[in-house]
Image 1 (tube, rainbow over the protein chains, first blue to last red):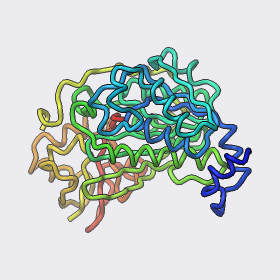
Image 2 (image 1 turned 60 degrees about the horizontal axis):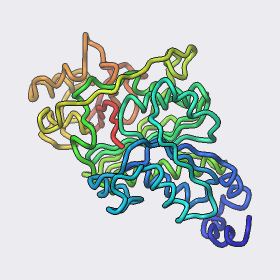
Image 3 (image 1 turned 180 degrees about the vertical axis):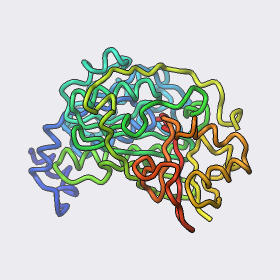
Image 4 (image 1 turned 120 degrees about the vertical axis):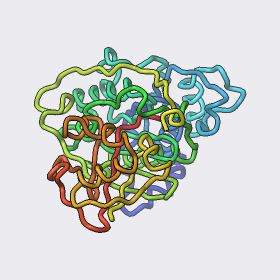
Length: 267
Length: 89
C-alpha cells in the first residue's frame, strides 16, 4: 500500500479485526455489481470507498430524471448517459486508487454464465426476476459468492450466498411469483434511503467476506420493514433438490415479464 | 393471538398494514382465520393444500417447510411472516 492508501483507509485499518492483510485482500478482489441503480449505487460506492481493487458495473440502462431520488451517483446533467459508464467515472473520482469498469451489456440467462466468470464476488442489484435468477444460477454454477439484495416500497431484503455452504436465492424461492403479484419499484415506488440501507448491507457483507471476516447473513434472509423499522432475520436452508445449487444443475431461465397490475390496482 | 407479518405484495389483505393479528393453533388455522376476514387470501398462499412454490412462511423466523409445514403449531405471541420474492432494486 502507498502512503495515500494508508491514510485513506486509516479509519478501517484501526478496526480490531481489520488490518493491512484484510485491506490487501480487498485490493486484490474483483467484484461484479449487477445493476447500477438503487442498490448498485450504494453498494458499489461502499465497495469503492472500502478499497475493493476492481469493480465491474453491469448495466445497460441510461440515466433518467426519475432515478435521482435514490441513485446518487448521477446528477441531472447526466440524463441520457449510460449508467454504468457514468457511475464508473464517478466511483474513480471518489477513489482514484481503484479500477472501475463499465459493462453496458444486458445480462441474460444465456450470457450470465460467461459474463460472471472469474469474480471474487457478485453483488446483485438488479431490478427484475429474469436477471436475478440468471445471476443466481450462474453464481451457483461458477461457485462465486453472491450478495443478494432487493427492495420494494418500504421493504428491503438481503442475503449472503456462499456456494457449497449456504442456501441460494433459488433454494429460498424456487420460482418467481406469477406476473402481476409482485410489482416493480417503477410501479409501486421506492424510497432512496430504504434501497440505500439494503445496498449498504450488501456491501458490508461483501467487504467482510472478501477481507476474510465472518459474515452475518449466511443461511439467513434479512427482512427490513422501514414502516415499523423492524429487522427480521429468518433462517433459510439449502435444498438438495435445488435446480441451481443442489445435487443436479438444471437450467431454468425465468422469463422477463412486464407486470401490468400495480399494487394499487391489485389492492 | 399471533402476529402475522405480510410482505409488501400481500398488503391488500391487511389494509396496507405491515402486520395484523389472528388466532389459530396451527399455521393453517391462522391462515384460514385471515381468509374469513379477507376472502381470496388463502388462494394466494396455498394451492392444493400446499404452500405455493413462490411463497415462504416463517414461524418465529424459521421456514415452516422445515418444521411441520402448515400443521406447525403456534402459540400466543408467536410471529408468522409470509413472503414471496421481491425483485426491485
